[in-house]
Image 1 (spheres, one colour):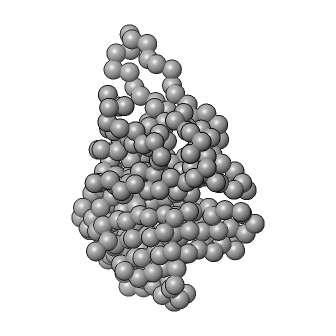
Image 2 (cartoon, one colour; image 1 turned 135 degrees about the vertical axis):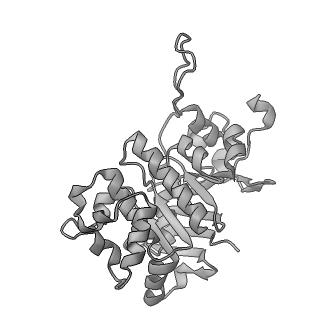
Image 3 (cartoon, one colour; image 1 turned 120 degrees about the vertical axis):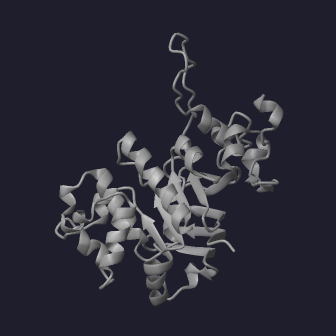
Length: 315
């Protein structure tokens, strides 16, 4: 059974003429790392926060968000609190915003868990820190060290699901690599399912078993990381990959001009009658502007495009 299964998730914000999340289907198995990628504003963080029942003020949602088989959208407040303390946890992108600067880090880890000092020390060591940091304050640690503390805090309840909302964005490249390696080792050690939200395609390719590509509140494509990045089938996925900078193997050979995606994502205040990517897509036809594409089931994922790319077009 999946530790997380989202089915036809739709969400509306007050005053918006269309849903900000429009029919999201997504799953994470125990011990699996799933990446959710896309441009800023595509709905990635909103999707992950919905798993903990963290909806924006005034928002309404429909569909199913099942964690360990129980629908988050129908949970009582008491049940939600139990979910957040034991079953699922989130690591946010800014570790400084996750802790109280006036309290010692040991108090942060032990909040609501009296008598769990031994577990806190064990987890702090598991994330590669000396237990002495438990007596320190947040300002005494670097950003990378503090992010390790928030990872340990997220693991205090022994969650089956870990939601990682761009947890390496505020870190330097070397520390990013260390945190990603740490998360992968902890996943293997504890058998935790990871939903990793990122806009970094190289990072997603390195850490994920499967990938979902999101655009304007919809899933454009999904599949195994190796297949999806080698042979993307949605024009948006292909455009994202083409716009990703690459290091030249031979610096004597000039590289190609970096590709860009023309235009802007659709305005949330505007209705969508067809494919959300149609206005920016080089393959768009009148059909794309008139009707939203259905999600075509593939052997190893889905693609939502009237004119999905074929293997021959990647040759």
